[in-house]
Length: 322
Image (cartoon, rainbow, N blue to C red; front, top):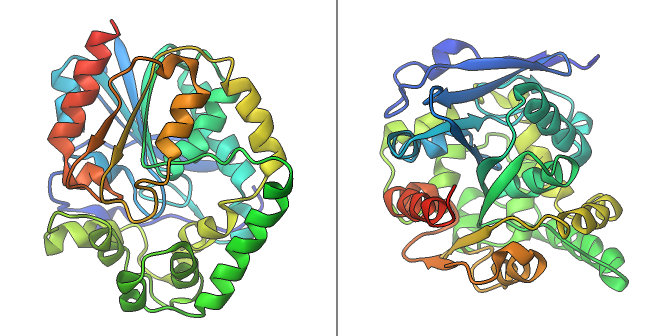
C-alpha cells in the first residue's frame, strides 16, 4: 500500500480492564492486522467479528466463556480499528477493501470449517468473505447486523435517501445523536465531529452502565483525529457496492450450513426492522433453529448480555453437533 499508515502506540492499550489477551499480528496488504487467538490447543474455532466504531475489546467478556467451553477463539480488529494499522486516507476505506483485507486474513490463517459470530459491520464484511470462502465456516451466528440485498428501484433510491438523511442532519453533536438515534445523525456525527467520543457513543448504544475505564478503552485506538479515517468513512459506505453485494447474496444462498440469529430488543437501528427475518428467509440452514430476541440489550449487545449471549451460542453449537 502506498498510502500513509498510522499505528496506535502500544502504550495506549496498557491497563485496559478485563483485556488480558496476548496480541497476535498478521501482515495484510503491507499493514499489520491485530487479532486475539485464545485456546489455541482447542480443535474447533469460533471467529468473533466486530463492527464500527468498536474493536475486539467488545468481546472481552465472551472470549473466556468460549475458551472454557472448548473452543479456539479468534477475534480480529478490522483494519483502521483497535490495535490494527490505520490508513489515514478515507478513500482507502472502501467496502471492497475491508472485504478483501478480511478475506486475506481468513486465507492466511488457513482455518476452515469454523464457527463465527458477526455483529454490525462484522456481518456486512464477514458475510461477503463467506461468499468468497464458503468452506471457512460450518456455523454462523448473526447479531444486530444487515447485508442489503437490493434490486430494481431500491438499488437507486436507498443510497440517495441515506445521502439526503446525512445531509439534512447537518453537523449533529453527540447529544443530538443520543436524543434522536438514526442513520442521518450517525453519519453526520462521524463525518463532522472534530473529536469522536467513541466510548460515549458505545455507552449511548448499550443498556449497561460502562465504567469510565471501559469507555476510555474504546477511545484508546484513536489517540487523535489523524486516526479517525475508518470510523468516519464507514457510515457513508453502508449502501455501496450493491451489485457486488447482490452477487455475494447469490453465493450465500448456496451455503446451507446452520445459521442462528440473535438480535436484541432495544437496538435503535435494527430492532423490529425485520433484518433477522430476512436472514432467516435467505439462509436455508436457518430453518427450525432457536432464533432468539435478546432482552434488555441495545446495539452493542456483547456489552449488555455477554454471558447470556455466549451461553446461547455455546448451547446452539453443541445442539448442532459442532
